[in-house]
Image (cartoon, rainbow, N blue to C red; front, top):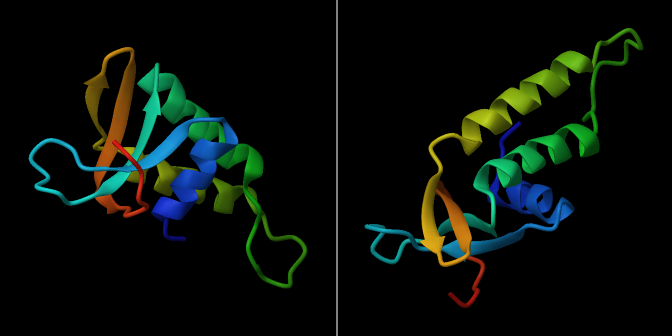
Length: 110
């Protein structure tokens, strides 16, 4: 599975986080996926929790004995790898958490 910006948006939206397109420091106008929150650790953990709660197995083998828990673990590992390398900027009371390696061009006001 490939974790996309749209997947991350759905996970952020599941817990009420504000997702947006963002251009961080030294990005020279390039835009990436970001969330705005008051507690970055809680927000990212909530996204991982949402992934575990909302995950649905894709098409798998016809064998009914297939253990989908391995698929879920692989998905969570890929998600945590994708969420690694986050950067933050202070926005006064809130913090923007952004991932430069995840292109996202949805137009929002900054």
